[in-house]
Image 1 (cartoon, rainbow, N blue to C red):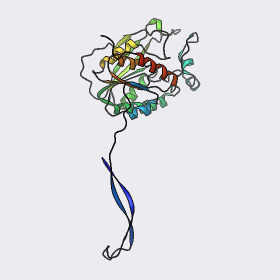
Image 2 (cartoon, rainbow, N blue to C red):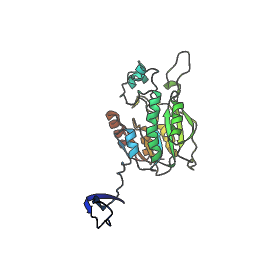
Image 3 (cartoon, helix red, strand yellow):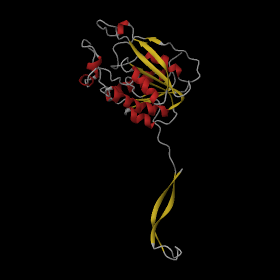
Image 4 (spheres, rainbow, N blue to C red):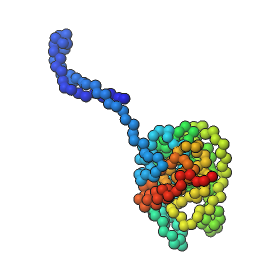
Length: 283
């Protein structure tokens, strides 16, 4: 409950009322009005929202999420401004690939701008996560050092790095060098680690099945392993849902889930995929 004051008018203070020592003054009079404080509407759980990630995470109730499991735009496709400004399909797909994928936004920033942007949604996630809540975030080798820095700048305790091994048949060859066969999973916690008897490997050898639903899709089998870290009845948040893989894994595990995706076509496809998925897979 809170109070506010509303001006009713002015009162003329006479010499007699002022003890004969003050000039005539016109002072405002106030009426106290009691206003009932109402809670902000909570975004619905177990659905995908078509809204900007930074805007959405600020609307979430404080201490309402157990895990932020997400895969943001890496902004790493290109060394120069012209290359970064190109479409995501031209940056991340070989010229021989026949499958067409929907382009996505927020992938044309330089590293300093990307860090500033990450700070905005990670800070919002810090408020939304419960104490001992976890951040699990995918990234590539170019932005790995920057992500570990900005996660700590947002207040989280960095816990380590796991590896997604795409396997030899699912990675681009590189002439006179090493094949880009891996992406990385940075994980951190809000304060102390949760006390759970779950043990995951440090390297996940998962082959992504083709055709993909999204340009940067991650394997659902990997996501199913990660959500085992969430307590029963907990909530998984994905701020860059893409094809909905992480939210799908949470739904199949019987967890609450919530996320956002701005691109209209990607949002529609992910929403349909999530709606068709069972609430919990048979054990």
